[in-house]
Amino acid sequence: MDQFVHLLRQGKTIFTVEDNVQIKRWEKVVWNAAWNPLTTLTMLDTQTWLKSSPEAMPFTRQLMREVIDVAKKCDVPLEYSLIDTLIGKIMALPGIGSSMQTDAKEGRSLEVDVILGTPYKRAKEHGMDVPALTAIYTLTTAVNHRLSHKL
Image (tube, rainbow, N blue to C red; front, side):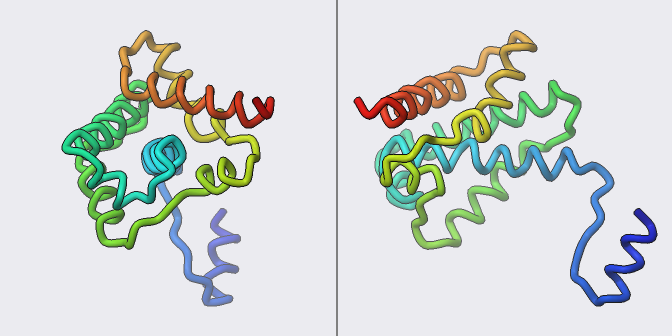
């Protein structure tokens, strides 16, 4: 790794070396587990979703919190402050869709297992109660079933 880092520095490549790549991985899981299925299930962009009802923001935060809880059970030390960070990032952007939403619009199969499967399955392995994650996983799986079977 040191030699690779040295080569990157010589080439003036912009990069960071993470002490615990699982933290970065799970941070992305928290982001993706929220925005991909929520924009897909509603067919709304992120801003419109968050403004759609008084329950949208608390539900999104609960979903993120549950994914963080799963990460913690998997010994990945995420902080709940990540929720505020991610909400701040999305609020600074114009309303955006997601790759999963694009796949749904184009009638392609959804990456349910890639995006939601890991946190959902890890929660079940640990006997965790994750109602928001369970609902999102179940509904997104049903949409994927419809798309895959062209019902």
